[in-house]
Image (cartoon, rainbow, N blue to C red; front, side):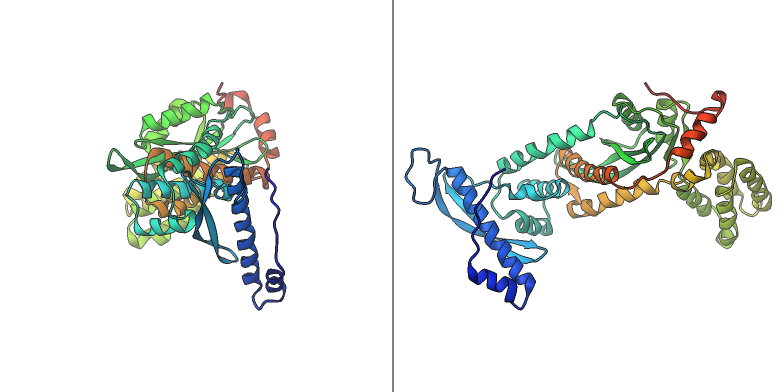
Length: 407
């Protein structure tokens, strides 16, 4: 790592410690330090100090241009050097987190391709300055893309994942001069240590059975194993691919979506009556009690809310699969809320882009974001204490086991 000698004059120190605004003093200090770093970097690139005569010189300074940079301590102005006949490059961009780098790169690509909105252009200029080219973007992508790709394709064989949650979201991507809707399939798993882990993401043309089958096949090829329960919504293609690719695994239908389906089919005047009954069924202490309450509810409302009762009865077994697990694990595995919160983080960045310039930018941005979340989960608290589950699983009769062993 390069080391730079930084000088701070007495006037700046006076402003920092005795000025009326401490933030203003810090901003001036930061501005001075970064500008000195830029000058040191341009010296490294041309291999000569200002006015120095040397045979190793690689270029000549050609002034500088101001570049406002908004920071947490205020706006500072960087004097970005120019090099005659070459382009000055700085590692300051790389100080951003990977997800921020990916976001900036996506916006830069949009500007270069002439499809950006006014807002994107303004944000790009503030973050990157006005001088960047296709070659600059390409070089930056080459630094980031291999990191994200390697993480997304890493082996999963080091852990078993008893619980897997999957979901998809749709994004707009520009392809062949047209804007197309594409599905991004996401999967997270809870390993036997109790930590959550992002298993990976895949961009598909549609959220079809073929796309989901490809997704699960890809996870298995990377070493996914030990799956006991998969949680998802009731998308037909997704459910069929789970049953085909993960044979023997229990499927938990997201109870939030299931409740919504039942209530959508319930007459308005009966919703306040039926909601607590369905809630009680889903939160029953055991499958037998849940079925007893189901039969009572159907008997009470099969004439007044026939459609809702058909939906409730048809989806009962899948929506209560989690009741076969110890009670400790039911609350966090009865819905896809965990993966949907992850989707919201993606959406927060995606709203800035609106239309991705290409498929690569989708994987780069979402992959970088998921990669950082994965690192936070690995270093954070356990999502579930798996001791009770492992004991329960070990005591189950083999004939009753639904665990699939994916080799």
